[in-house]
Amino acid sequence: LSIPSLIGFGALFYVAFVIIANFLLGTQDQHKPQRSDSPAWLRTGLSDWSSMIPVICFSYQGHISAVPMYAELRRRSMRRWFCVISIGLMVCVLLYNATGLLGYLEFLDATQSDILKSLDSPGYQPHVPEALVSIARIAIAAAVAVTSAVFTFCARSAIIDEVNLLRGQTGELPYPWFLSITHIWVALVATASICFPDIGVVVSFVGNVCAAFMFHFPGLCLIATARNDRQLQAECTSSNQRT
Image 1: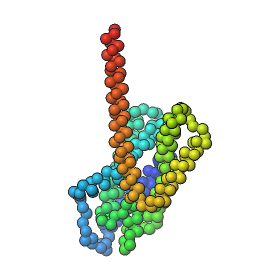
Image 2: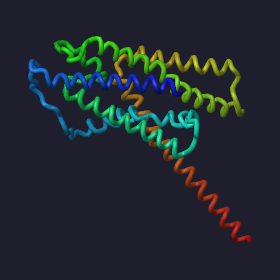
Image 3: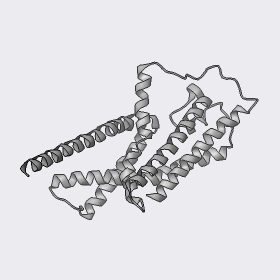
Image 4: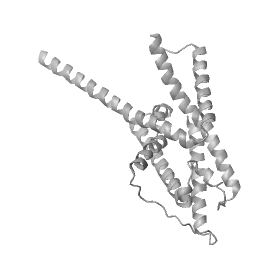
């Protein structure tokens, strides 16, 4: 998990660097044409606000890797786990917001769902060398290729648990089952990426699923914890009454 995460962070940092550098160099370009439109700092439409939720949930779905991240820690403790997650989330918030804000200020209403596609818009000349933009695309491809293994691990674990539940057994599945589940999952992901080339469609769909998962699953955990606390309290009360 450490190596894919390191590669993914490096790719994220590099893409953010390219977008931020492109905006800053554009502010110093005296030959840059003036834009007739202005940035919309506040949108009041309900559809605009509701459309933000899937994007935000899609961006911050790192909680899926929280448990594998804890397993990768050398000196495991809740405090160390919390510090690692907090620092990582803070870095993501800073990079995401800086990239999104400066990318939007550069392209305004012409901003596409894939910010790197905006750099190839007709009539637009990037303020950074084309080689840096090409490297950014390669970095994104490399980050997705290596970090998808983490999400494949999480999805495969969930599917295996459901299969064991249906079979009424516990423990590891036979190796052919393990390979079949992995291959089917990878094939489905590849098929979806081919059928939906626009990442905006994928973000809208997956973001809604992530929103349900992010708010539903922690709520279930909270209910289960409260129920266990009540049962423990009831047992302690009955035990005290007997004594």
